[in-house]
Every structure is written in structure tokens, then in C-alpha cells.
Length: 250
Picture 1 (tube, rainbow, N blue to C red):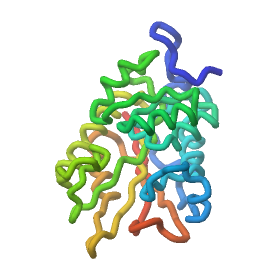
Picture 2 (cartoon, helix red, strand yellow):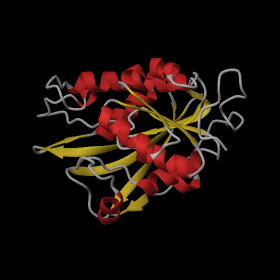
Picture 3 (cartoon, rainbow, N blue to C red):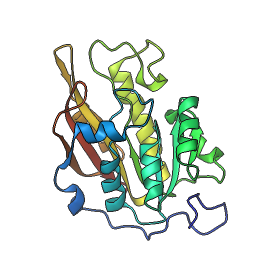
């Protein structure tokens, strides 16, 4: 089975019929997902930044629970390609956007079947239209991503510029994540799922509650299904809580 989106005019991209809206998390996500720091470090992509913590086993759990083989899985913050690699390994088609060209090249080498485009996630819909073949609005079955993190205090670097510009502002950061969420709502099919992996961060004595704040961002665009805890034996870096925000498009 091809791992690429279908060409314009071909059969619909979504391999499954529109799903009924879920009223509860599926069994696989209804309890905390346990992971360990050692297992993560052993599987982390070579050259990955120390604050990258997307866990392959967690991706496997989400992709298996919320999509069928042949489904289209997208990641607007593709990073080092964990979501795309694991989705492809599980027989899903993949599409991703990544801002940094060196990471785009890495993902293309890691996942030759993946369609990954260099660009800014805040332009997700435009970039999807430039894909070959085009990734149309309403064609994605599952969006699984982990946006770049920011703390509410002492964080001048702007996450949405790959931390390369000191223009960071937490309120604007959340507003611009809202722009990405709005475009995710256009891209995902009715009944499809959007899952964001986010964490609370303790920084300079202050805890930034990204889980709650990003949940509010997604609440404006989707129906909330639930929150799944990622239970680490030891949290990476300065994280104090880690979770999957699970939402569905009406």
C-alpha cells in the first residue's frame, strides 16, 4: 500500500468512514502511558536537541488507537520525524511540516516514504496545498504533534522561529498556536482526531501550565475527548507533568 496521499481526482484520501464523535478516550489512552527516561534516550534520534522528548512508544499507542492502516497521519511540527517514522512503520501515510531545513533532510532520509515540507506551521494549509500530491482540507485522519515549548517567564527566544529570534512573548505564542490549531481543524476530516503532546515546565521557580493553556487553545476548535498522562519514571529536563491532549473534529 502506498504511503503517499492520493493524487487529486483519485479515491478519497481517508481510508475509513467518518467516525462518530467519541465521548471517552479509547482503552489504550484511558490510562496513563508509562515510559522511562532510559528507554527514551536509547531511541532518541541522533543529533536531537536535549529538550526533544517525543517517545516512539507513545506515538505507536496513539496512531494505533486513533487511526486505521492506510490512514493519513500529519505532523505540523515534524521535528526529528518520530511521528512520521512510527506512523509509516505502522502502515499509515504521512505528511509533515518542519521549519528547519536540516531536519527536513534528516526526516527524508529516515522516512523515505514520508512527504515532509520545509516551512512554518503557521502556514500549514498553504503548505499542504503545495504538497505533491496535494494534501486537501478535510483529508487527514489524525494530526499528532508536539509543538515547540515556551515558558511564561524568562524566555525571550521565540519557539515558533526555532528559538532563533529573541521575540518571545507567551501570550502571542499561545495565540499563534491557535492559528496552527485553526488550520489543523481545516485539514483534519470530520470525526478525525488531533492530539498534541505538551508538558508543564518548571523554570526559574515558576511553573508554566502548558497542558491547561494548550488545552484551552484546542477547545476553541475541537471537541475535547480527554487528557492522557504520560507517566515518566524520571521526567526529562525541567518537565513536571507530561500529557496527550486528545481532541476530535465535529
